[in-house]
Length: 257
Image (tube, rainbow, N blue to C red; front, side, top):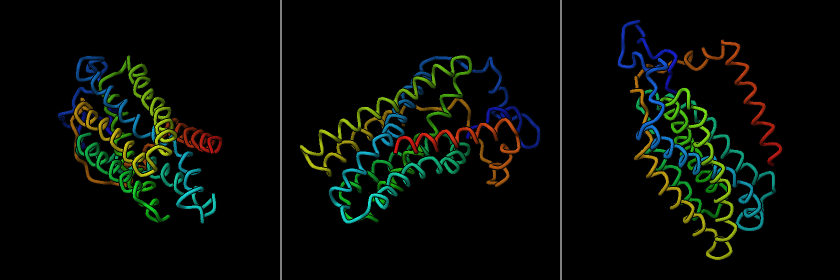
């Protein structure tokens, strides 16, 4: 994703449009555009991680309804793949964000997330739910999740913790709202329309996000190189941090299941 540490120089060592953006005095630490980005990013977390937090509801519903001929372990592949594609897609989303800025991944992610849920609402077969909910919607949510965090960080340095805290709060609120919506709407209007109602809520919030989330740093296109993904792992602090986060999320998901 947007690299602040090497923003002062291009590949040849000459000055670039990013010159000086990583200096502490370059961070606005506020302003209308910065706080609108925080608001839009919070909406992104609401519809991405907030949505993922209610995967347990689908496990139980599918077991009792359209997938009742499948075992619980087979049905569990749906939320498992959903979480996997949301996290793993960050490798691709980060590259797109670096090259084109947040507008492209947000727009594509909005379409894929909403389209995937709309298709889930009419899905009856196991493979259909895998394709729509576990893959399409999950990749879409990934494409709105990563730009949210990255763009907010470009506006704040000293206040970054507070700003990101407000952003993360969106996922907590979404994790409360979506399960309540589904629990109450499914018995009243059916699974299909309950999913569509959630999709319309997600679409509304993502329209706001598309209009507000901006990066202070201009995108810079670079050739795709595998070493760009592996080089940070050669730094012990980064490698240890990555390993710690990996084990944290592994334990978190095991306990959640």
